[in-house]
Amino acid sequence: MTQGIGTLLISAAVGYWVLTQASTQKAQVKKLGQILGLIIILVSVVGVACKIYYLSGGQCPPGGKGMICPFVGKPGPGSQ
Image (tube, rainbow, N blue to C red; front, side):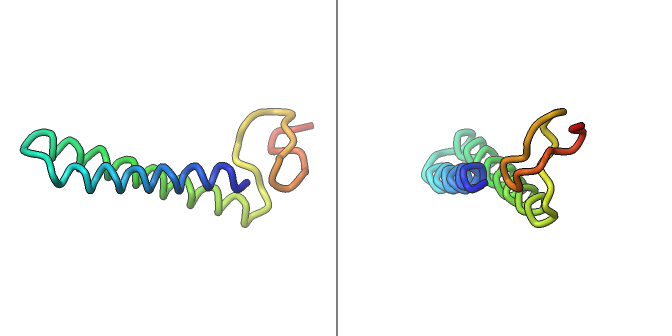
């Protein structure tokens, strides 16, 4: 559980670092760095929100049939 959320939080920090580094660049590189940094941060925050949503409902994120959910120890959706 925490491994996925931790990874997403680290990637959000990396996105922030990219954003701050972009501010010291010029023209095209600055614009590209700002866009890339914002995309990384947004994807990370949305990923954390999705994981928390699924965990709070006692469900697993959809992953495949027959999988055991590592978060709650029950079969995942679509399992038999």
